[in-house]
Length: 446
Image 1 (spheres, rainbow, N blue to C red):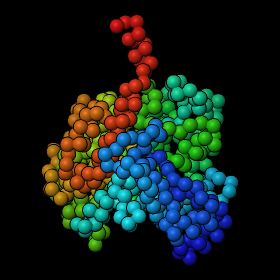
Image 2: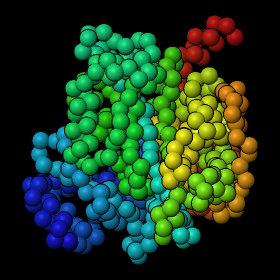
Image 3: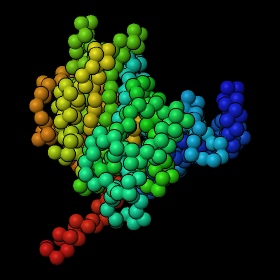
Image 4: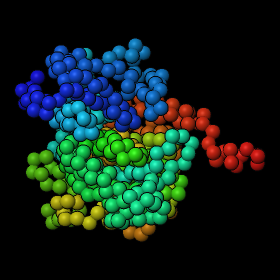
């Protein structure tokens, strides 16, 4: 075990370590072990989990998989110490470490979401490139409800009233929950989560946090931990924070916009701009790849039945793969920037997506566009709210993913198969539930 790690654990008086792995839904799975056990387990590679955690639905149930082994064998957890952080909301000094997963022979578990992203990043490295991202994550604060059938509603702020009307960018509306957001920022500081700005979004008690641009894997880790952090901070203030894509019928949805640029690994120059500072051919190819492949990658960015309720025309959410400069009605927005900061904003992913997989999907499409020199369609300079070019539901999106073999090659065939198995099973589980809409309109009318 590294001496620096031992010193860090001792300096912070750590008594327990949370060993975290992201499952397909982005839910933290793993084990909590005493620090002494953690030290010995790492030396002996004895910290293990069943491989079938990657065959677990968001409901907690397991699927019957053609890829995962029938024997439900264990895989070995390998800590990534760059992700070693405190857990600031516990009284007892506790550390958390994000882990990778390997088989007993040392080979990586390619169906693990974090490994899927690492595999995509490595493909850029092979051609001398380094992607850079900046996520933007939206979420709602809602009242605590003990019954899942109760519709969600905005919580009571310090004024004693619930916010019911849109308050986009409202400073006083954010201040309604000042103590909660102070805790979020304090928790983020303690975990070295590089959050930038907080703003109020269009929905009632809907907020957005932006991350600074940086290393892809590090920011995916930070986003994974941030969602957990916000939920915990909200609980401490007796409200719920939700990253559902469409939690309330009368409110807009929540997105996870992903800004992406690509640097020459040797020079550090942004390849999206040429020597004159103009958009380069590679910029055009990156957009072309996103237009060509993101439709098939939709299940990774909109992974649930609820996800597609957000992607409706007129909801300030994209329904298309058009691109345009500073145009928020298109799926691929290009913010105005200096040549070195030229980037593409993928506005399709929902806040409900696993950040590792949504980022992997975005980068896979960019990589394919660059390597295949895919040409982008003409810039869309007008409103594209009525333009629909993406799948309208999860089944249609999965059909496209399962047919797009080129995209599967980049993401990993085994991963795509397991992911699709889970999503099909979740869809079947959803179909077994009778909704209030059906009882309201079908019970006595048909």
